[in-house]
Image (cartoon, rainbow over the protein chains, first blue to last red):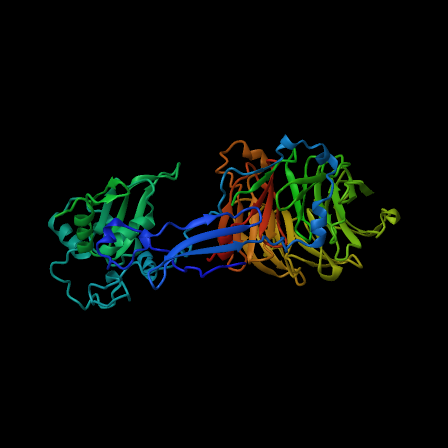
Length: 297
Length: 326
């Protein structure tokens, strides 16, 4: 490798007109001719011509000449290289050039992973809360609303649940126990779903946990087809802890159907997200963000 | 990755084998011509003409000069790899199913199918250094297993022969005396026909694939079951990466059921599993029929699959394959 002068390590930053005024005026790189690259030619010789101001403020031309040499494939054994030049035999002798026996696939084939890299297989663990498992990923901030403990358990699993009085003005009220008891008490004779009947709420498990959280569910419509769940998570995460992101995907085509749901742990976060993102321009479309279920009160 | 498609066979593929240097790929199919390809670009080097029936299996000597093939025309033939010339033909009374050369290439094990009133058998033949001196005499003939013996391979130091087949039992035989040493147990073993068997690169363990929709990893000396890989379709072909702890299973539905379903439902993918965690890593799609043959390049950087559709697909892995994390 031959080399004259010194190589400029950093390139002049790309000029943006908006930044011109803020510059302190010393950086005049934009006055220099642009960087020139000649080659590489058949011998692998490449010339790079750059211009730069030196410390005295003079313009300097730097020419860097490099030669790239391809190394022979060292992995092949001598025998294998010999075999490369073996004459064809059998049916291959009569092979005409246009036979197209060997073709490179026009289709890009990927090693399709059964689930997203880094995620664990869903194991039906006894008593395992799916949200709690999500929490381990760091996406959800687990805060018990009964005892205020962080990252240890969910409100429904709070060991101090019975000790603490139900807080007043509980916004995210679960459709369970107390509410249901009063409901059944008030209107005898009307049908009450088994899940809402008195006593049914005591041993609620993970799936109900999820349902209750549906109340903090936000529907996002008018999504572009390219939007995937991680994109949505990225978009909504700044507003607060997100417990679930779902983008509806067409089973047949695998394309997004243009809408999705985001569940927040806290209702206030969800409200803020709605206020902020409804009408937000995302991927050249204007998002519509609203509560997934009409508010019931 | 963009696989290389090789359409040299008119009929379904049956077996694939790389030579030790990994520059040649041998393919066997139900058409009568085993074929050799350059394993890097998929160019056809030649075909071995002379068989008169489906070719079920092949093996190549360590120095890549001699090829042995077993065929349904009731012969096993020895070929000159370079010229495609037939050097010798072992004649049997029934179709030859599996062939495997021993360490040192002095012996070959050949299995034959049950045919007419002949039972299936495992033959051990000695291979002469000079093809002129080659004889067709068997050193040893093992009989006993019922049904076809789909695979027979040599154990460590050529002291044992491992066989597996239609009776779903893996057996280890003494290659000197012909006595059966070990046999897989009913509880841990396969439930249906074992279709394929593949040794690890170091020969310490081997993998069997079966129509019972599972593949099992065994210790080659003690025949203890190490791992089981469960899948949702019959397994026709298995192979192990010599580089990473990956096993690859290929399969699909029976060929007779293929036309009745959509190809997406056929599950004609090569499925990658983590050898230790037994967890699925991913699948490589592409074939239009069940995968009948799989082989890993000895360098672990590419693998090929052969399908019922008559195609060999040669896959060179993308760099990110080597950093897959579970």
